[in-house]
Image 1 (cartoon, rainbow, N blue to C red):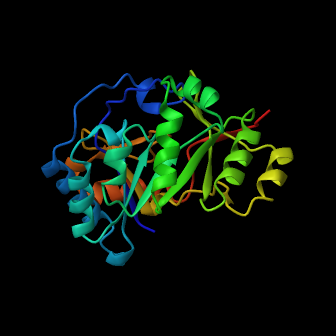
Image 2: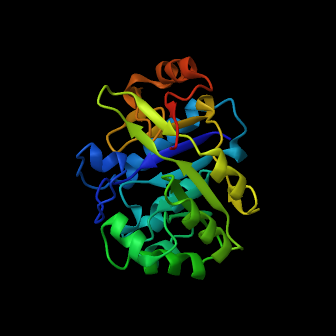
Amino acid sequence: MPTVVIEITYKCPLNCPNCPIANLKLNSGILPLAKFAHYLDFADRLFSSEEKGEFYCIISGGEPSIVNNLREYVRIAQDRGYRVTVVSTGFNPETLLSCNADLLEISLDYSTAEKHDTHRGFIGLFSRATRVIRESSNSVIRSTYYVHNYLDIINLALNYRDRYVFVMPEIIKASNGEYYKRQILSAHLKFFKRCSNIILPRGCNHLKFITIDLFGNCLLCPFCRVYIGKITDGVESVRERLGRWGRRCPARVLRGD
């Protein structure tokens, strides 16, 4: 499915240790609506050979729920025929519950408030995130696998049987600049597979997936932030660079133990 991830802000009140944005020390403003529309127009042209009805837009950050008019970003994308996902920690439930997104991806890495809030650096975040999950019919849970939290992921799946739990690999950037993707241990994998609502990570098709950051930079992935040009370089240039990667993920595999 052709998918564009657009990062509309790098502001975030949290302090998550594995955040690729925080690690870049970015603290900029909010993407204007006109630029957001321009980025979507670029994605339209980039994937022009694909069937329009299958386009997906993922609105990300930073924390998109701090953007008061988030609903306007969702509307602009939907008016262009995109199905819209908002990825959030659940920080501002009111904004998320009223934004009219087709899907809400809510990040929960632990099944208790104490562990989750400590990890994310904000007391009360767990209750906000779980409120969004309870009060919405279009939400899923996204959990990052850190090895030690495999039981928490299973508990989340059991506690929210009516929600899918998408398991994300931890992405680690080494001092040499290379990215590593933490592999799920086989001992944990067999337990995950027993829960029908746990969705395990799959390979990315980079021919149909692009990230555009706040400044108009085109990236291969929001996690493995490999630069492939700016939208000002033009569609053909970015498409050619995107095609060099094909279906290959730039991250090496790191054992989970």
